[in-house]
Image (cartoon, rainbow, N blue to C red; front, side, top):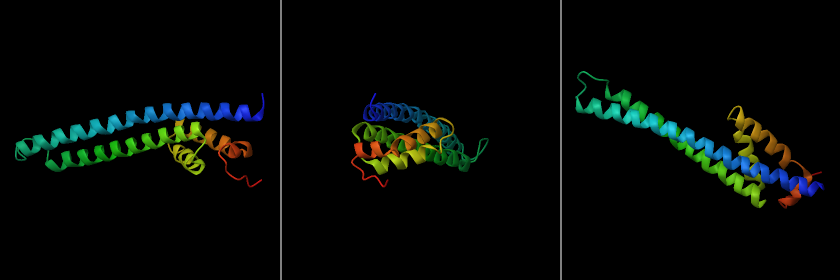
Length: 137
C-alpha cells in the first residue's frame, strides 16, 4: 500500500470519527437543554408562588442560564467538529482541522485520542500535500 493511499485511508477514517464525535457531543447539548428546562420550571414555579413555599426565583434563573450556556457551547462544538470532519474528507481548511484537533483534546478521554491522532496525521508532509499546504521540511 502506497503512502498516499494510507494517508487517504487515515483521513477518511478521521473524517468518520469526527462525524461520530460531533454526534456524541450533541448529547451534551441535550443535557444542557434538560438542565435549562428544569431551571425554567423552577423559575416559573417560583414566580407563580410569589416566592412563598418554593425555591427563590434566582435559583431557577441560575439553572436556566447555566443550562443554556452548556447547551449553546456543546452545540457550537458539535457543529465545528462535524465541519472539521467534512473538511478532512474534502482535504480543505488545514488550519481549521488542526485547531479543531487541538480543541478536541480538551474532551478527555475520547476527544483527546481523536485530537492527538488527527494532529499526528495532519503533521505528515504527504498529508500536507493532499491539503495543498507547503511543507516546512
